[in-house]
Amino acid sequence: MNVTILGAGTAIPARDHSPAGLFVEAGGERLLFDAGPGTLQRLHAAGGSLFTLDRVFLTHYHLDHCLDLASLLFALRIPAPSPGAAPRWLRHLPRQAGESCPPRAPLAVYGPPGLKRLYRRLNRALNGWLTPRHYALRLKELKETSVKLGKGATVRARWMRHAAPALGYRLEAEGKRIAYSGDTDVCDALVELGRDTHLLILECSVPDERKVAGHLTPTECGRIAAAANCRHLALTHFYPVFKGYDIRGRVRRAFRGRLTLARDFTSFTL
Ligand SMILES: [Zn+2]
Ligand SMILES: [Zn+2]
Image (cartoon, rainbow, N blue to C red; front, side, top):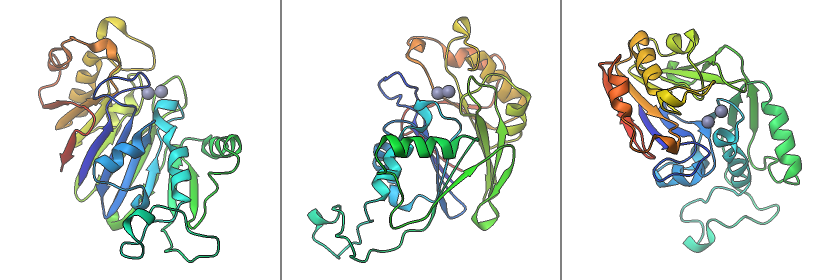
């Protein structure tokens, strides 16, 4: 299983900390968790491709987690280039009406209730340019449930505690377990989501002294990781307010396992 953090930041631009996005290759599928602004560009830079994504899981509909859904659906209207069929400079141009194009597998997009409304409104605001062409788009609104992937892999969704309805996700594939909090405050469901994971990816928005409801601090992340008994904790979603702050020291008061403070493109092989 390969996991790449495409954005380790928030809505506030910061060097090495772009809005939320997580690319996972597992169970023979390519998955995107969250799609903040710029995620498509960083997916490409990380060696992935929007044309071969199988599923997108959105945690919630704050802009720093979902805006590139529109970029993705717009880009997917342009048929995937078939290598060798056209000169390199022509491959990314749209085909003419009626021209055959290689079929793309359906794309499934998951998120909390409100996903279909979000899609409709975005598509209306963008004059219909998100309407799928050459592929099937499957929008699936989730509550607390499990989604079956290929090769016995599963993604489980749990409600988190945030300013907007938000899900956290746990992926089990190839004998490995990872969990991703999205945005959340401390809650029992988060500890359950991360229970005995090989990799737990938690948002860590603000310092202990600047606690904001609906988000986590370093000390809280350390306690959650310890309670969940994860092997490896990766922190992401850092606001620039952390500049010069000893995040690691705060986490270490409670958590003794492996610890990574993510930047854009931090990746893990499990
Ligand atoms: Zn956020
Ligand atoms: Zn949020």
